[in-house]
Picture 1 (cartoon, rainbow, N blue to C red):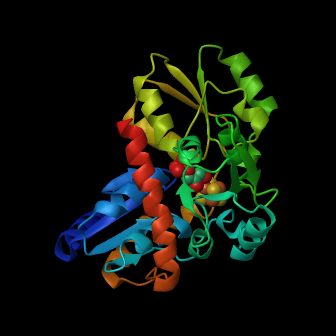
Picture 2: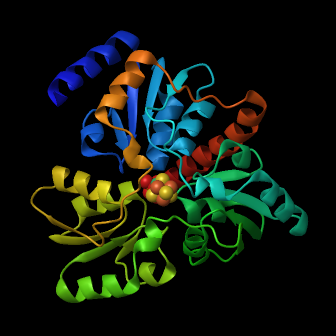
Picture 3: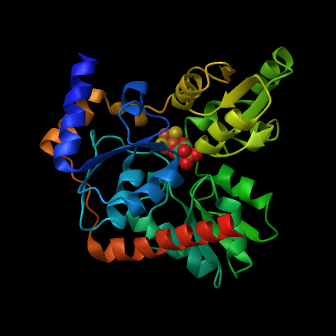
Length: 309
Ligand code: 13P
Ligand code: SF4
């Protein structure tokens, strides 16, 4: 059944000049048909340079919106429109405008996990792969940063600037599930393992890590490291990819129940239907898209510069 669907997906992709972009948290069946599988930054970079006519985005709302903002002349479809990141909804644009009034002269750096209307109010976007570089590249000494308070803490530890989280308590319900006690127990049980933690986890969890980084940076680390075992504190979909791409190493999920329900809404069947019917088009009104695009492009430029430096 799956092999038949995979064949039909391949045919449709070819005929329609389509591309499938998928996030590392997708179900394995979706990961396996992706042209680009990656973290938020890699997917934004891939969207910025694709020449496909149709983009099927297997990720959550803010990721598909980012692709649509960067490709106003292309069609971007999302297999299940209910795939909405709850964290992205935690920062409405009026909260940003209020914070700007209160902290005159501060820069606004927003996590890519925000909706287009919020991005339109920002100066620059960042992802979990580049937040300290983006913050440190700015001229301003004070930075309003949202919505993830834990990512703000992570960036603050790597910057001399004053970082103010907006809203006060933005969070991801999946990464909130990891506790320092669970990680400490696993470290005791597997003392030879490297501990890789996502910066959306609480500070006490981050402090127990060997490395704190984005999902694709974790994957790279497992390929480059001499370690044979890794304790992984992020959504379970990434562990599936790690096992597939690196079968000789052992991957221990810090929590088997760390599942992002929204990411898992896309199935292979829905990806096929998205390609075939081109329904659930993601479109951002141009006045908002134009402002959001400037902030996303600024991130891409600063990231390119950081890579060159
Ligand atoms: P990455 O950009 O590290 O893949 O993270 C995306 C995300 O939504 C984490 O919850
Ligand atoms: Fe949003 Fe958390 Fe799911 Fe990432 S894991 S998409 S931040 S709810």
